[in-house]
Amino acid sequence: MNHWAHPIVGCEEARALETRLFGGDEAREWPAMQRAGRALADAVLLDYEEIGGFPADGSILVLVGKGHNGGDALLATQAILQRFPGARAEVVFAFGERKLRPLAARAWRELVHAAGGRVVSRGPAADQWASLTGEYSIGLDGVFGFQFRPPLPPEVASLANRVNALSIRLRAAVDWPSGVSEEDDRHATVFRADFTYATGCVKTPVVNGLNAASVGRLRYLDLGFFGPETTEGRLNVLTPAVLAPLARLRDPDSDKRDYGHVFIVGGSRDYPGAILMTVLAALRSGAGLVTAFVPASLAPAFAAQAPEAMWVGWPETAKGGLSVAGRPLLDSKLERATALVIGPGLGREPETLALAVGIVESSPVPVVIDADALQWDIARAGTAPRILTPHLGELKRVLEGDDFYGSPAGREAVVAIKGRLTGVTLSGRGGYYSPFGGPVLARGGSGDLLAGIIGTLLAQSPDDALLAAVRGVVWHGLAADALARARGQVAVRTTELLDYLPAALRSTRE
Image (cartoon, rainbow, N blue to C red; front, side):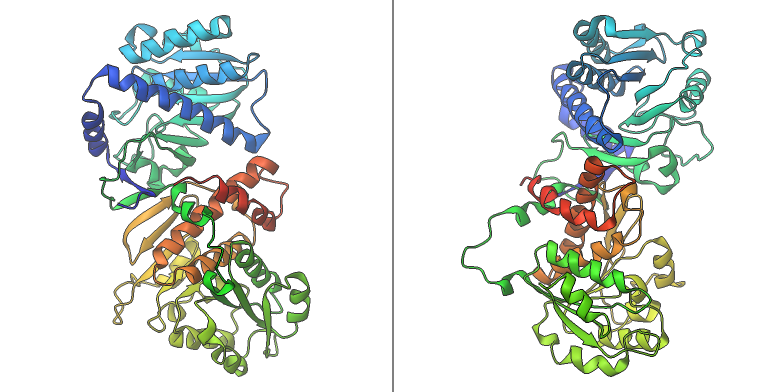
């Protein structure tokens, strides 16, 4: 197993995993619940930084069922209240305090003992929670876990509707939102979350796109459930450990040529900024050498902004795109490259797209195909290993009625599908999901930065396109998270993400 990817499991597999780990022994389950509670508190408070940080007098609404999810939520609440002496909590027992299972009851006693008068509770009777009208800093949903079988009991559905209508700044689901199930019932009542914190393992319903509106953003809380003997699943969640080798000390005898030479082809008079952002990202992600082929009219200005790169001015079409007349410029230098990126800012002039087909068709090095180069014929040209980086709209354009992977040439392609939960797949076999990044990436240019990062990583490991792609999306996502926590989601520029690549890398561990 790749130690940097953990399997995403179905509910039956999750039950079997917990049985194997704990065997129903509460003496073994309690430490795991404590780890989950602390990890949940840490993760929620970290994500709260995106909206300015948890207030010193903040309030927490905690929804508790009978079992472990409720216990996790109670222990997380205890941890938050211990850090913020001016904060308070309201706990709603969906089925009553007396229905708590032993470990959840123990978590409740510990919360009361630790926080005393800063905690109030409400029972399951509708008149006890119907008056919930306050504004809350955090809402923690710990009613149901993966043992849930739909539909929600009527009283819990009524509670869900009430809570969904409240003013809550950050809504967090413990493991998964109560009401979500494996049955894909999109019309069911569900607690809506801004973040879902998968504890111990990620279950398949939370990566199902049909549940996206309820799940919100996914976070994976690794509690050590998976050891080195664990095999990968058909679907897997990526962890920051995939970046750890990049954070090691570099060889003191190394040379710039040891860290890859990435060629980047793109740009046009209509879209000049995209190629510059890709080059800047390649430089900031550790490339030894970067050569950029851009329209000749853009090269002088770009060289002034990024003098570390080698800028090659390319003959232009009448509209300012790359002309086929410039092809010898690339061919004469391509033997120096270890990877090629094509597409950012390329435009869609027929001459330029025909040029891109020819470049990919004859490329002797692996290729990252991005942006306007994500066309049916370009994606299928030649036999070089390739990474495609589409969003969902571009993916439809590339597929155009077939699965892409069954091509006569039998080539393999790594596809990194950008979205709420970025997924990476190798020729459609299995997949890896990155739980990093968020709405701060919903702005022009974020994909251009990703192409530059992946291009650098591919240039450094040209024989492992999958590894380059998963490292790229994780690094990009972690930097986006760091940017949002430091600056918020709104008042930032896309290229500011590059300033957070170092911190994201240094935060990783083997």
